Length: 464
Image (cartoon, rainbow, N blue to C red; front, top):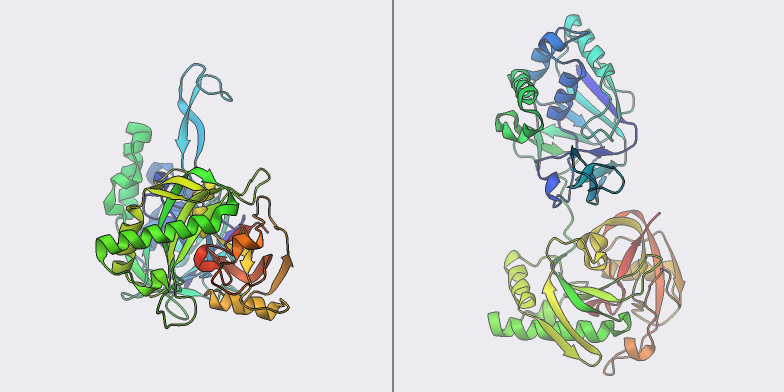
């Protein structure tokens, strides 16, 4: 047996799985870190050919010829897309950058940072290296300072037996597996040498993506079972609202939004399905569409104004249903009604306004607080068991704790009057603001209560 144990010293990892990190559109980072990335780190640790200092490089030939290893790594990891920022460029440009004199600024998109529940990763091969290979690999491992990006420092250990307490989850090579992981192949050392020679001659214009022969993908299966993300429904379209609308008009705005979508759906595709309008719906649970208003809440200067709209469709809706609903939403241009006169446009890749950005509402969090009050599903005292019932009806796991307030619990949270919540043709129900905490991070959007089809009960993630 041959093992390489990796300890993430900061508890995070950042690596670009497919070369799209610099586009700003990458939503999930590389996890687990690929064996090919580990191999490249070991190559860089002591170089090859004349650049070696403590080894002769022959151990790399043995390592690249190994089959794909088992990877012991925790399956649960939080993927956090990093915010684009401007950094000082290498070239000189007089007075073009405020903090760095004589430097220009350029946009830098750092990609996605992954935070696993367990910072340890173990790569395990079934073949034992001879002593003349094992010792040089140990020397190289001792010289590795980081894996992936330089802000992910690591400590590597090489051995011939499994660690005492490895992560319980194992990614195993399997042609029918659900994960794609890059692995090294014989000849990669020579190809990395070629890239290095090109870089010395041409500088930063040489990129790894220019050498597709270096990419060798293998299929992996995660144990104990196929790691399939539970279908909890998803938002099919995000829209900007201009000008922003007072949060107190949320019900009026989402009602106009729903009516416009149904009208255009009828015009384009015929009779809308029951999941959109709810009439004649015979299923139970959380299988109706949600028309969401997206307010500016949760920050010190938040005012609760609505900057965006979103249409969420329930689990089980197929791609054809998504496409037809998206067509209907994109056909809407103007919403006019009592207290509402806005233009809505499809959201592109812009970062602002942050209140309408998908990442604001889709990120994972253990704690969520209502931006709009939640309408209770029935009268009576609100205890944890009752909130757990709301969560179950909304397709969410049971919470472990909650707190309740008549007034908002986050800056900018919207405090509505009864006439702004209850509808004339429906029974009057109590409502309040709540904050809930789950045992594990839950992805958004999180919407609770009897008014979730109108966007009431929309929650915002709360930092721990």
